[in-house]
Image (cartoon, rainbow, N blue to C red; front, side):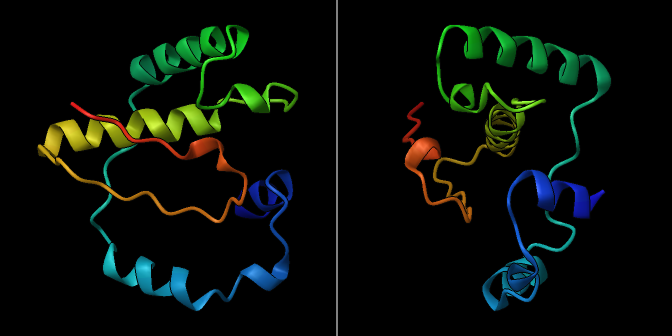
Length: 107
């Protein structure tokens, strides 16, 4: 599955041994939130579809992909986890170079 995702997101083999990612993986091992349950996942996908149709970020720029909801699902899970943990400041690190995920979310 990981290899399939690499292909979908354009990750090549040169990115497998990224020392920065390896450090973050060690730092955050077992410190990530759980996956969405089925009902929450289905609701998030429905919301992502609506947002894609209305060109509301994140994720609408991926509308031409087979399943364009990844950016929204990541964003949604980050916000849910931050709310659950009462986190006020958060950094999300990605390899993407286009600025579509750049956002400041204030509560």
